[in-house]
Image (tube, rainbow over all chains, first blue to last red; front, side, top):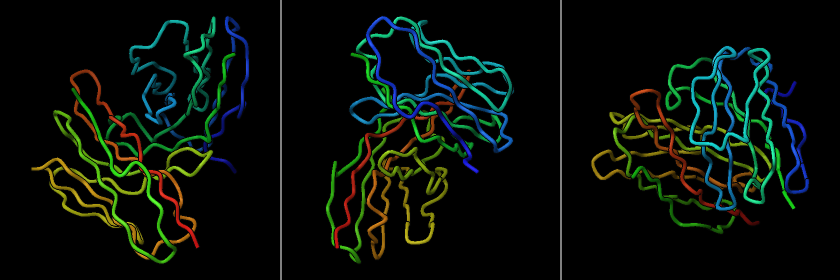
Length: 116
Length: 114
């Protein structure tokens, strides 16, 4: 009965590879997000989708491409992985897109990506 | 530059004791202030949220305060329990022109020991 789930939990890969992280929420929420938590523990928004439509796209390299097949899923594909991509990636969801700073977001457990 | 700072960086307290975590924010235009608890290996969980007109908000043993004039917030934990061991993250909400933003602080790592 996990609310927001992510797979895989751990991902270790070589530089230059392409990888995907999957996220699913069973809360019936309309809006989903991807965050990156760096080594200094700062969380930063990357993308947000509302009902499969991209509504937030922060300054992120275009090697990162989110895909939302339906409003319950938001996957993150990363091309040509670099060392600096190593981080913990969190998926989150909220009831609606009433404002990133107003809606309570529910976070997944995170995917720990290590690029060697 | 929008920024959130937290202190202390880490804290160790004995079970049953109280503690207070601090947050200073420099964001504009300010919308609200939220505290999250992040257990090790888990995603953050929202504890409290306050708009600029609210001074205090409680959630069980957690009480957050907000001083919008000095741009400071604190999170007070009463009668700490071992399960309170976690990182506590202060987040400032910013009203944006195209979309709103949230600025996360680096967190305070709290360890509660028996």
